[in-house]
Each structure stands twice: as C-alpha cells, then as structure tokens.
Length: 543
Image 1 (cartoon, rainbow, N blue to C red):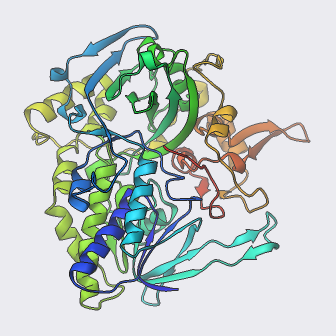
Image 2: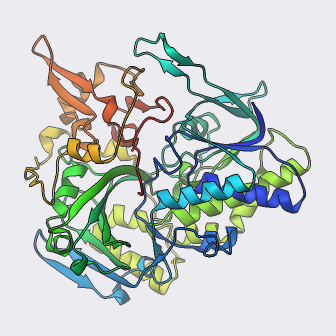
Image 3: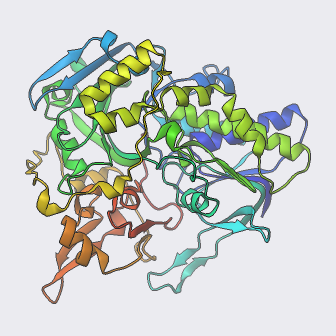
C-alpha cells in the first residue's frame, strides 16, 4: 500500500502530526493519503500517562476543543508538594520554594488514553486512515539509503517460527515520508538513531520507569482537581518522585517515577511503589478504596541535552521517540503534540513541491524557532541537577534556576553517564528487605498485571530477544543477582531451578506490559525489545 505519509504510533505525537497535516492540506486544497499504524488493539490501549495536561498545543491544534467534546474537563484546583522524610513523616513545601514549573494552575487532570481516542476521531474525520492492531516491525530502506516506509509484523507465526493456519503476512506500507512516533524507546526509532548517528552530538538519553494505578476512593475523601506530588522516601537508593491526582468520578490516579540511573541491583521499582502507598500522605486517600487499574511505562527524561537530530532522509522522529518530554514540568504530552505539529508543517512544504524521501531540514528551523525549543532549553538543567546533586540539593538548584533565572542560568549541567552502566556489583550493594503486600494498599506483580488486561498470543516468537542466552546466568546473575527479576514491573523475568538443578533464566513474555525497561536497564544490554504480534500487550481502558 502506498501513502504520502505513514505515521507509526497513535499517541499524542503521531495523531497531532496526522491532524495538523490534514488541516494544512485542506487549506492548500491538496489531497493527501495519510495513515497511522498502532500496535495496540485499539487507539489508547497502550497509552499510559499521569496525567496533568497542559493545553498549549491542543489550543493551537483545535482551538474549539471544548466545543468538540474533548475529554479534558477536570481543571486543577490546588497543588500540594511534599518532601517525605521517612515512612511516616513529611514536610509540605510552600509553592514559593518549589520550581514554578511544578505549579499546575490552568492545567487539567486527564486520561491520555481517552484524549488520544478523541484525537483519532478527529484525524479520521479529516480523512486519515487509522489502523490499530498493526505493529510496525521493520523499516523499509530505499536503494539510496533513505527511509521508504515500514513493514507490519506477520500474524500467525508459531513459537517454532513456522506458519500457523491463521498466518497473515505483514504489509509493506510505503510512503514519501515516514514519521516515527512510537513513544519512549521505540524499537524502530532506536534503530534509526543508530543507523543515521542521530545522537552523535547529544548527551546519552536518560530514562525513568513510571507506575500508575487508578483507584476508586471514598467520596468523602475525594477532592476533584487536587494535585499532590512528593519527593524523598521511599527512594533512598534512587531519585524520582510520586504523584496523586484527584480525577473525576471519585477516582484518584496514583503513581511513582523511579529514575533508571539507580545503582543498587537489589532495588525493585515496583516494590518501592507498593511501599510508597502506605505513607500517610497517600494512604489517607487510598484507605478503604479499591484499585481498578495498573500499568507501567518507561519515560525518556534526558530532555534538551539528550535530543537526537530528529530528521533523516525520508522521515522524522517526533514526541518521546525523540525525547521531547519536559521533565521540569513532568509533562510530555503537550510537547509531543507540538513536535508532531511542527513535523506536519515541514511535511506539507515538501509534499507541496512533490518531494519524496528527502531530508526535511525545514523541520529543524521550525523547531528551533518554536516555543517547544525554548521550553526544553529552559529545562535543560533540571534532570542533570537531580542526578548530580541528589533530590534535595538538586531541587534547591532547580528552584533557583527556574524561579529566579527563568531557566536561563549561566550554567549548563549535563549527565554523560549511561543508565544501564551505573549498576553496582550485588556483593557491594545493600540488600533491601521489602515488606509483603497487604492486599489492601500494596499488591504483588501478577495481580497487578491482571488489572492491566495484558494479553499476547502465546504461540508466537518471543518479542524479548536475548543476544546471548548465556549472559543472564553467567554474567548478570553472577555479578548483579540478575536485576531483571526486580526492574521488570510485570514479572516477565525469573531465575528458576532448571531440570539439572542449575539456575535457569525464564522469560514469561505473556506478562509484558511493553514498558521497555528491560531494553534500557539490562546492565549487559543483552535484551532487545521488539514488537510482538499486533494487538498484543496491555489493554488500558482509561490510563
């Protein structure tokens, strides 16, 4: 199938690219064929975000979004920020001594899954073809080396590599230009960055793992519009922070973000999150409530310093595939949308002059002249300050930088380390004794994965590929007590007793929630995450 533009990923970046492109084409009375492929079973099925949403990009894309019924209705009414000193103590911080980027007046508490479903409806009304359930598995390269589209994954291949009765070959989706909007650590984006050396002038990308649960709580405890953020405990061996947002319908959205540059291989981000919910600051709202959804997703948080070049012959990287999240605000949806809208402007200029497979150099100029570039530049020091100085002193630096220098302090901080390379030897690290879940506020991994509605066709090749099958036991277990057992939020990786009595590395691919943490944090960089059959993975209803 041939298109003018193929977009990989129906998240905020991909769908904003599609909508803006068709709006511009209508203005120019130009007919375009544009398609969006999405690996989830439906649009929104794989979307997981906190989310406090800044409407800046949406205001530009659809100025009448309220009249059009966008699911953006719960305005933020109040901001609370706490420093958790211990498992029972906390200090509420005045807004005046916290970075102003953390203040959320004028923003909304939303389900980004539902926002993307709405964006997909707008895209289809504009003439975009949206194909959920189709995973882009390979990049098509033209003879001159430019990108010419993507190939979707075959369906109906057995674990043994043979075709089943249900076999359906993948499709070649060829395009004049291809936009990659796969989200954080997209596997095709990763390939393109390496092939075209897009990151040669950038700092290494940095990541976190973000957890999220949705709870139905006692209406007497619910304060619609209240936003709570915390830093400090329980993350004694890592940096990060938590959130609790009071959404509509007596629900709260609660989660923890753990930076993946942590050093202790015994640390379990999942168990840190479960422990966190027992702190009185959060427990006061959750006690007596019911957990109704769970999910986890990696976050690209390197920001401005880690941005790769976003263009290459035949296409672009946008949104979190490139790393446009603003970590100073803990927000990446409005920035992802704007990157897609800028991509659309560059695309329409090229398509109007009947170009194909060229490098869209005009995008870089548009990006550097946009509020997106300015916003990311002003937040460039935020992550490195936390990494270099820790939560407290990094927070002090960021408050001074943001509140007094407006993000333009004379210093440029960077972090040139690699997240996966920071792991200590297990023998030199402190073991962590996590309490057992109580089944009321804290839970185990398997019951959590059940709430994510995760499903994969069991008889298919494993999408979690080991480059060397001996490394998990001979290297990672020996040196690091195989941390995949702990950094994975879904119980995918286990060390079990083999038939010969020796330890064996077991991959439960059926559990995978597509967070990509293994691809990022494996200290040997031995695990490669690729797409499974289309429609596999979590099915988040309203994350």
